[in-house]
Amino acid sequence: MDGMMMKSTLCALLGCRYPVLQAGMGGVARADLVGAVTRAGGYGFLGMVRESPDLIRQQIEAVRNGTDGPFGVNLIPAATDPQLLDDELAACFDAGVHSICLFWDVYPDVIKRAKDHGCLVFHQVGTVEDARLAEQAGADVIIAQGEEAGGHVHGTTSSLVLVPQVVRAVSVPVVASGGFASGRSLVAALALGAAGIHCGTAFLATEESFAHAYHKERVVGARSEDTLRTDLFALNWPVGAAVRVIGNSLTAKAGTARFGHDPYLRKREPIALEDDRPIYRYSTDSPLRNMRGELEQLALFAGQVAGEIDDIPTAAVRIERIMAEAAGIVAALSGRFEEVE
Image 1 (cartoon, rainbow, N blue to C red):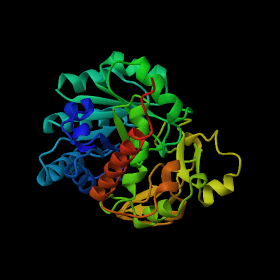
Image 2: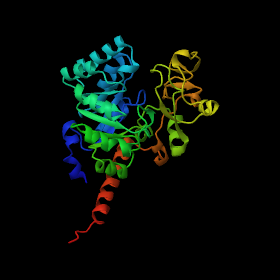
Image 3: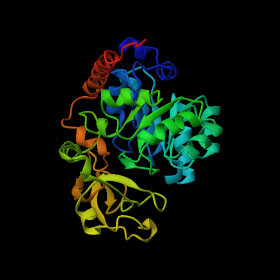
Image 4: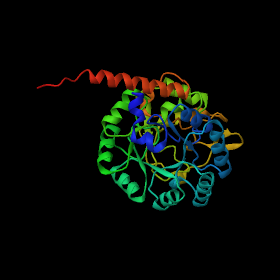
């Protein structure tokens, strides 16, 4: 299996050993996690949504101090002030990052700027239409996100249905996202026509992720049906931006009224602190290592695949398990088919 993966077109494009991508989870995906994933043969993204250019530069340098492998930076134009976005992009370009991963609405000008500065561009989408738009704008890789995914979800179609449609619709490599955390799911993604998998929940629950221990423990303890989609947690994002989270006291209080919440009408009530920065009720901030306060009320991002996560290993062990299981599945499948005359 390892030899086969070495021949992956995605791996050749990215310069990694395995077609296993670590999602750029805002706040959670810091240098420790990205460096660990890169050293283990995967490909990681720093989650730098609405972060300062200084932090972006510091995090890029920190990853490079631990590995010479390629990695990218995840940014969200639709959820970032235009001036801050310009400054974030400048920090990435000045540092010569290998790639930029974008999400939510397609911004052709941002894609062009990144390409003009020599970056590979990934674009995560939730619909076939957005996949086509992103490719037309110059994206090199499309990440097709099914509605099973944790965190922000920009579509309502399952990965099983969406991925093959996107594969047929575009000519660039497609990576499957939403429900992928195992070797079985990697083989399934390849069978659907994807070139690899994009994992968030699986890497959130690792030793190196910057998620708070409370968040990791909730992921490990969650069943798939404990996750739900809602736009309750929407501060700092566009109206109607749905997320998948593990249910908590706020979602329980909302009952069936999980959608239709306007972030611009929310009163900003601080319930936690990130160092000295206030974290507000109903914000899109998830619990991080450096936070304290009412963590149970924060957005506990997790995909439905949380039902498969039962421990908190290192990122390297997570990748090793995925690849070993994938090898076993391929071997088992090859023994099921016989040539019939």
